[in-house]
Image (tube, rainbow, N blue to C red):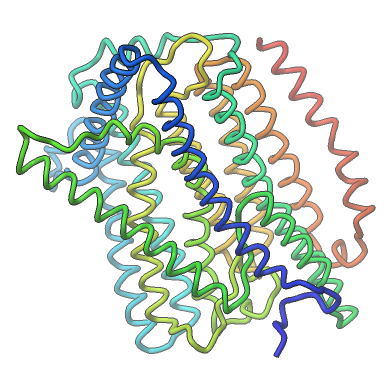
Amino acid sequence: MSDPHLGSGSSANPNLVLTLVYFLTIAAILIGTAVYFIVMARITDPEVRLMELITTQREVQHLIDNLSSQFSNFWRLPLRWRSMKPYYTHQTLSWIFILALVASVVVLIVALALDLAQVARISTLTYVVSLNALFMVRQHLYYIRRTYLTYDAEHYLVLDTTKFYYFDWSVFNVVQLGILVIEFLQLLSFPIRDLLDALYLSKNQQLNGNSDGSNTASFIIGIITMFANLSSKFYVIQFWFLVSVIGCIVLVMTVIHTYNVMRPHRPIAIYWVKYLLPLANLLYLPMLVMLIGSAACLSKIGTEDASDSSSGLLRCDSPSVVKPLYLALTVVAYTAGYVILTAFVTSFDRIPIKGEIHYKSQGVAFLKNMSMLLSIDFLLVANSYRHIRSILSLVIVLSMVCFNINTQPCFVEQINYWRTYGFCCILWVALIVTMLTNEDSTLSDTGTGGIVSALAVERNALAMVNTYLVNAE
């Protein structure tokens, strides 16, 4: 029996190809990273290598201290009103989101037990949004109090005043540029995928045909962005792979922390943690978005959106998938993965050398969290609220543009400029999606040529932004 999600004229299984590309890319990144550092260790002078290890160990220890401070700040919630002083707003919002988390978990358990599909869907969305909002509030409070938590005010004063105008073409910077391009394509893929799904869904309803064009576009987007669009039989493989990876991360962190606490005189060396940061930044969105896609797909089973082409990045309607089990594991895996990965990529606050592409942790925290909110908006909000979803995406991307212009999160001015330009491109596409999905008749009468025409009309907005940024320089 052929997979109904495949194109009729396809000679190869695109889902299998995408699955192989997904896992081979991850394997290639891991092997390439290991080979690079092994080769560099062999060709570097031993004395230079020793100094680099000492510096790296100091930087990683600072990272671990920041990570510990973040977790400590996350869990330290005062109950009394007087104890909340002077951060009444942060503490009150934190308790509101915690209550929303608890309530959504209770409702989700009841909904899964009674097989209430629509209730399970709403509670899943509430839980994920509340978790992200809670972590954002706690992180913002952490950055406000950071000087008092780390006792290193001079270090952060230097970070706030450091600025470079140009970058050099070192291997590290090339990797950083590659990650920037991939992140841009990943964020851009959300409004594009939403537009293509809505366009082809409308045309298929008229023609009663298949959605080969939508599947082909989703396949290409999946290859470029590492967001796999998998069929039912490959969903199980990817799901257990992601759950296993997150479980291993939690296990390794627990073992190292426990061992170092029990034997502080002979701790496990953790200098290698620094080299995992580029990998964590690259795989941050693919891993978490796949879990969001899993939650979106599972929560839509039994609802009217389950049969739509835009039901999510994954298709989980296999008979072997037990919805209550898989949805519960997805929520647990997302909670652990989101908290650990977000805290990890936002804890590296070393002072960069001149010409190095590096970011302030506050900027990384805000943009990563807003990227997750963008994925939640496009994947978990129901298709019947497509207009609200589009408007929310505009608000999210616009906040990213304003934040990048106002705070300049990268130490290199050129990167801030091009990153703002990239966010404006995403905002531009999101605006077009909002206009084209405003009425069903618009989608019915719009083809690829119409989309291109709309893009040409809207390019003046980017020209205006470009002029503003040049003048700001």
